[in-house]
Amino acid sequence: MHTRCRYGLRSSVGEYKIAEEAHIKAIQIDEKSVEACGHLAQFSFVAGELEHARVHPKFLHSNATSHKWAFGAIAELLDNAVDEVNNGATFVKVDRVYSKIDNSPSLLFLDDGGGMDPDGMRKCMSLCYSTKKTNNTIGQYGNGFKTSTMQLGADVIVFSRACRNGRATQSVGLLSYTFLRKTGQDDVIVPMIDFDISKHWSEPILYGTQEDWSTNLKTILEWSPFNSKDDLIQQFEDIGPHGKKIVIYNLWLNDEGVYELNFDEDDEDIKLIDETAHLSKLSRKAADKQSHISYRLLHSLRAYASMLYLRKFKNFKIILRGKPVEQYIISDDLKYPEVVIYKPQVSSTKQDRLEMIIDTWIQLQDVPSPSKIEKLIIGWRPKI
Ligand SMILES: Nc1ncnc2c1ncn2[C@@H]1O[C@H](COP(=O)(O)OP(=O)(O)OP(=O)(O)O)[C@@H](O)[C@H]1O
Ligand SMILES: [Mg+2]
Image (cartoon, rainbow, N blue to C red; front, side):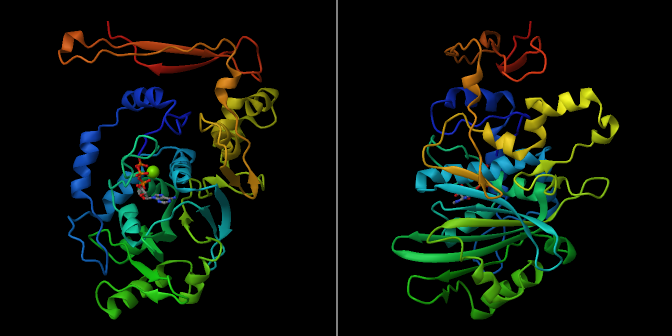
């Protein structure tokens, strides 16, 4: 999981790793505590035989508040798809779909990466369990999926298709805060069902009894926007032979009772409600502010996603509401680019531990006034 600064840029693979590591340290992620939480936080699965410590649903909810900004949460899900480039992913689609039950908007993510087999699905739904072991992935903590989906909505359903060791499978998992809360669960229970699709038909994979499997299916149907098994199976149609699809529903509303994400203002974008917009309507200053890049990055997912990754993708696209996002490599706009190689000396004694500051000054091309300069700080200021 990445705790975000507002303009968090992604180092996709390798080349910006050092800068990103510095950034991650600077924003104080304590890996040890994350590891410790891993020992505590295995979810329980209705039909699985997994040993688990108990995790109360309130933990899930409080954990979700680690993202203060909805686009930061969306970025976690984009990161997971970008990590799948290592497994052949060529796209991630982000879109608004409507819930079949009450026609409310839901958020959809679909990628054609390697997907997850039944075991991978269970790991994905567990806290602090990451399958990513190499240093060419963005994800590392095993928490991003849970915190981000729960920040965006109360409930998420996941569909995944994978082919591992000659066996093709498809799985459905439901992480539903509504279900956990309304049924008064003391444990985070994640109903899941898996099918073996290696042959020409799809065969339920049983871990316990047929009844356990059917109970899981029943719970998924009761608490998801899908009414029947056929309806669930249909969801795999646009996944292809492997990949992952996420539908986040019961999206959160803000204090005024409106959806935090605005799908209506621009049908090729997802906007974030500007809580201050009504204060400054139509003024020249407000118009300037809204055309400034720093405003667009905060309020337009298309603008944010365009500059999120520092590496230009060769064979991968983020497709937002049907239209690919044009990548904007922010460093191309540096007016006086300079590369600083930072080699910290690691010392165990406290007085030797010098902190450093690296300031990078960037003048962006479309700033409203030439005197206005954006500043990006990477690193630490000495405490003198
Ligand atoms: N789109 C995806 N395709 C395939 N597997 C995925 C996808 N998203 C998540 N997973 C699997 O689920 C696991 C958990 O994802 P999650 O985002 O919670 O953690 P992470 O990416 O490993 O680490 P971080 O917390 O740093 O994001 C991943 O390690 C990966 O195995
Ligand atoms: Mg992740």
